[in-house]
Structures are given as structure tokens and as C-alpha cells.
Length: 65
Image (tube, rainbow, N blue to C red; front, side, top):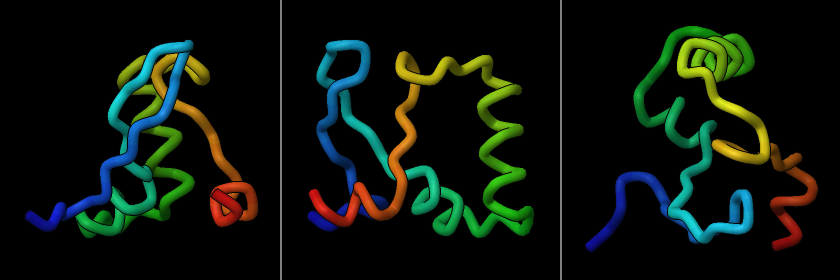
């Protein structure tokens, strides 16, 4: 079965979890707001904590994996 959005296993806070790329989700949902503004508001509205609920990868680093 083809996934609509690619799911990857990653480790967050030393726990293996299923993850998705936020930019892929943003594109899939066809959000009209700029990505940077949208993701910042999602993180704030949901009370997410970096390195616990989400990780930040820079494109250059992610391409090397």
C-alpha cells in the first residue's frame, strides 16, 4: 500500500516513534499559509516541545540520510 505521506521511524526523547515530515504534511493538506508561519502556529497552539514532541532537521542534513 502506498502511503499518502511517508512515515519514518525516528527516535525522539530516546523513544522510537513514527514520524512525518511537517513540510510534506503542509503540502498534502494544501495549506495556503506560508510554511514557516503555519508550523510555528501549530507548535504553539498544540504546546509542542522541541526534542520531545518534534525534531528539527535542516534540509542539508536530511538529504544525507
